[in-house]
Amino acid sequence: MSKTKKLVLVLGGAFLACASGVIASRVARATPPVGVTAVPIAGPVAFGEIDAVAHTGNYKTRLKTWGLSDGYVRHLTIAPGGGTGWHSHPGIVFVLITAGTATFYDECDDFTPQVYPAGTGFVEDAGCVHLLANEGNADVELIAFFLVPKGAPPRIDEPAPQ
Image (tube, rainbow, N blue to C red; front, side, top):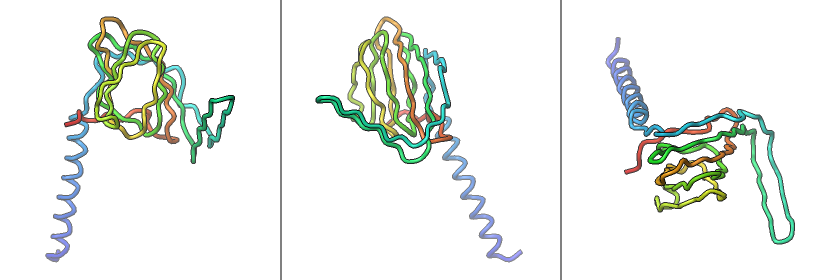
């Protein structure tokens, strides 16, 4: 075998080893949910392209997708002191707090805590690392609707931010 082929094989092996190490370390540093019970209600449910508009009085909304989507609905319960673990999503998530008070930490808002009591909701942006915590004394319950690219997972575990 020539020196050039040996060098290419050694460099290729080194590259693969480094890439595997990066992936393994990312998975190893992921922060799992604590005190969370997630019950799937629906999904994946296939959606074609969406171009929906509502305009009534002073209210306007528009939801538009390019490409196919999957929808998921989950009911989550977070025990006092629990949290979802750091994660992100490849699409948007509509979160409706139905019981308790949740505290949301999101890198897209500089991790400034945002508090959501029962009867309120918010939208999680795609690609932002975040965590939803229960810092109260009663269970937090919520319904989450995930709209993600077709075939994508609804959740991506992430390492804790530095």
